[in-house]
Length: 329
Image: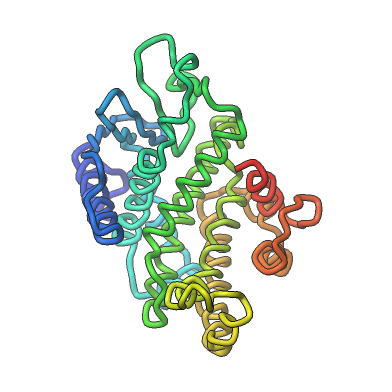
């Protein structure tokens, strides 16, 4: 039996406080300046899984249920109890459930912080503000009916786009700059993000609100791994003089062998990590939506190399929704 099967209130609060502290440090290190506002963390004792960010005048609050911390920990404990997952992930990366839980919660905090940083709260027309109170909010996970609050300013597409944007920038900040010496660490961080995404799917399934306020899980994984595929290229581009940064010259400067090893050691394993986490989390629809690995990465190649953004020209569910949102953003 594990030392704990469920967090107490104080344990969840400590986990989430530490995650926010790490997220703020990561932001400052990446941006070279502190986050523009000091977030207030409100940990709510609730057996339902949810997280949200609110802005009320100049007060920015991140609210998270204790179940968010609890479920994250339980998922990682289950993952490290799973022989198949440990054989392919645990023994390779040399980390444990406690560390993975922390990294997952750091990404959660970065996601909520980026709703503020990207100005999503300013996108709501004044005429569409809620009738009761002045709060404006964005949530990582939609609450069930007794917790729900409306998003009257944003059409469905806008809500999805906001979530994808917050995902992207939080992911970019957590994964940080590409380095050939950080491949194992990168795989760890990608898996940590995937775990939170799987928990969202589980919450949606139980709430019968799949796709209502945020993109499909497969879409979020498609964007995540699409960014990972791009990382060696992004690193090279950042070092080039702007007048040399055309695709032909960039490709010549990249070491093909290193890119191929990166795909084998990080990108492909990250896909299978996501599939395994979906199985362990009992997120049944994810594997089907992701599609087989060939179709998935053919779609990634079509988007990244062929600049295809036509949904009906893509195969997998996640790629199709990503393309739909890309044309509207």
